[in-house]
Image 1: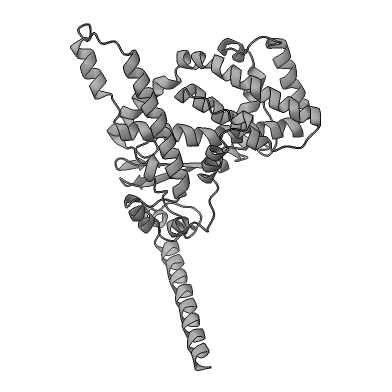
Image 2 (image 1 turned 30 degrees about the vertical axis):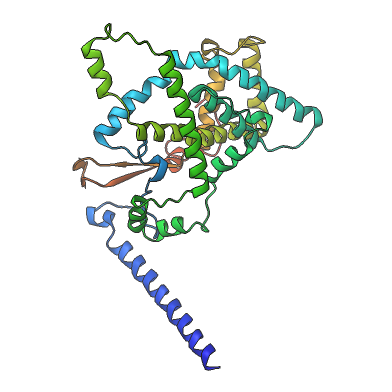
Length: 359
């Protein structure tokens, strides 16, 4: 009997101690937060929210690089999405779109209920793999289920994840642990994706070496120096590849799924989109020039992104002290841009919950 009384006493003591710590933390946060110190008006901050610590396979990507490293990487990566490069991808995307179309017809013929986001995820993955990595994943043919399941794990995170819990309780501790190799992302998903991307990069390097011209005499010294200055190291190349794969997979499939939701709930808008596509495209192959002839479709996609942004916030760090009107922004401050509230601000968008493509 004494044992149970001691056990209950210890449990009660720990519970009271936890409540006191949380209460003290909340009090200090609300009375000594950075906004109050800078004299900025605004709502009281919510406890247990901090800066996202990027580690593991993402730490050398554009999301984590800073200053000159970021500028150098960005200048190298940007040409990947030039108009000329995108035009060259249309043939690959059309092939995958044909398979996507067949899958939709199968469901329609069977009048079968299906998960549109899962199908969009398969379509997106096949396009990324083909256009950016030059490989076929055949996800639309129900292959590579393992890869899809691992990619989903990067976004399906709950409080059963101990690291995520630590991140909300103590961002500084989470940042320290991140530098030591711990991550909020599941280890099996990281390991699987890491191995896959490394295999793809190794294969591409081997192909490049085979196709490369061996006559170096024609190369100008200035060109060689410029190339050396603007070259990504292996870790940076790997991180960009992982970001392309993971971030592109989820954001695009979310946009497509929300677009189809709008088509289902807004039949008048759906009919206008359909009529424009029939009039401008007909049975012709989709090309870059043809897409530019679909202004109403572009409006609908833009309004979909406004109402249902795949990314609801993003952060920037002040690289120097800055005077913003009457407010002083200290160097190193994290500036959070809350995308979703801006997109639904009635002062900017009248009737923000109403879908109006023409705006």
